[in-house]
Length: 217
Image (cartoon, rainbow, N blue to C red; front, side, top):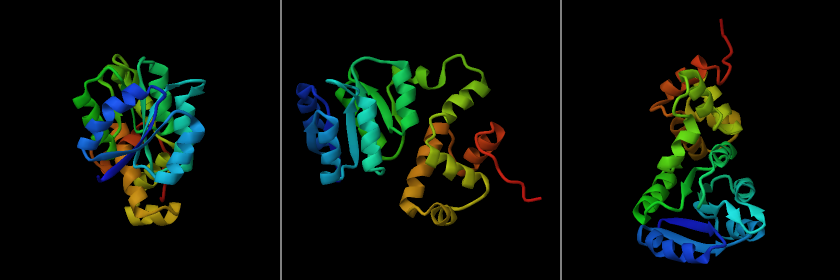
């Protein structure tokens, strides 16, 4: 098993149904828990690569649980799971730094593929939830704003340095974060802004006023 997953879901039937498919794909399910306290404890104990969090936990907000997991273990990729699509929740999950948002009505194959994609550092969103992220009829400026609003504060810091022309080593030094963490942030930025290179990300950021770049002349 190359990756470890934590499932936060009070519907054990769903968790047990997908568990063998994840493990067949090389993702070990280290625990299935149903509360925020148990989730945080499991994250600290197992250090999972991925946390799959149901948004409708009994008496608790899955968004809040995911946020606590990210606070306790920033390197863990958190993906929201839900039976009911809620556009506002999609945007909020990505704003909080979730790696994705999946509805439980997708096929097992799509689910496993999405998990693999999230583990590769890319943001995943169910097909029918995608319009909530960008907006089907938005102007280019509105689309840019909606894409940019999903960046975390740390990703904005990294993007600002990219726009200044800083390389990975300089970003690592200036933000006091590990080089691997820089790479993770860069990949997430490219995915969220729907661009393919650092140069495109820098151009996007400057063109749409996502970050401010100090003028050297």
